[in-house]
Amino acid sequence: MPQTVVVGVDGSDESVRALRWAANQVREVGGIVHAAMVWHQPVQFGYRLPTPDSELEDRARKSLDAAVDKIKGEFPAVDLRARLIRGHVVDEMVGLSKQADILVVGNKGHGAFTGMLVGSVALKLVHHAACPVVVVR
Image (tube, rainbow, N blue to C red; front, side):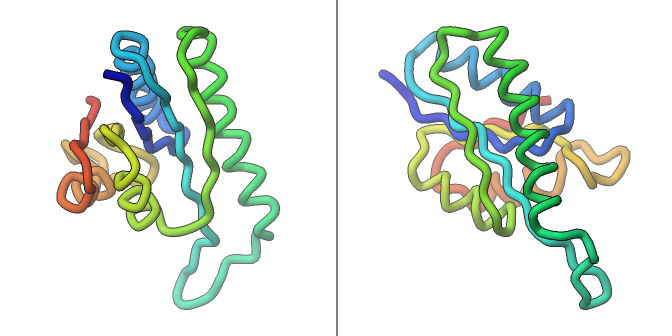
């Protein structure tokens, strides 16, 4: 049965491995892979940092495109679509999970504490997603 697979991509090696896992899964069973990157304007000590939104969005787009292009090269027959979303990563991924058969994430991404077995975002998604979650190590 064809599947809708959503993959959380943040540009880390772990997220690229998760995207590769999802592409392989869809190659086997059919369906669509949505590579989703969520970006936001960081806030530190209650203040927005001085980086313009357009620059942050551009950086996120380039990182997402690089990950998607790499996996498309390995899995040219897989329907792989990039989705760039502004928002809070956990909220947005939980929302996407309501439309997915499987949600796939890497075990750690950018910002994870060194030595953690599962990143904080992955752990939250395991507990709150509306579909099964695969955490790729």
